[in-house]
Length: 106
Picture 1 (tube, one colour):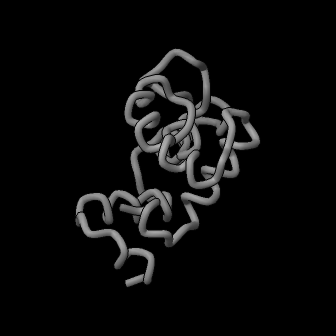
Picture 2 (cartoon, helix red, strand yellow):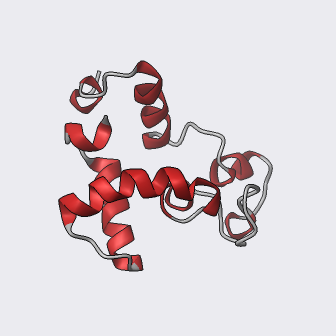
């Protein structure tokens, strides 16, 4: 098991996190590959933003998950002093997908 996974106590969260890290999930960005849908047309079916449903969209911009995101992002923003810009969101997303910091993965 990867070391960062041992930092996640909850087995359900550990499994879900692993699935997103290796693109083994049911987001349209992945499912669309098998349905021969062009990458640009793999829209989120949970919201009407017209954005491609990928890990970034789910974690940082889909309105459907705004309440959950606001709760967890407050912790992350405090850690990194990030503002609500796209550049800040991108850095936050990249760090959380590559981090082994126990605060971020638990």
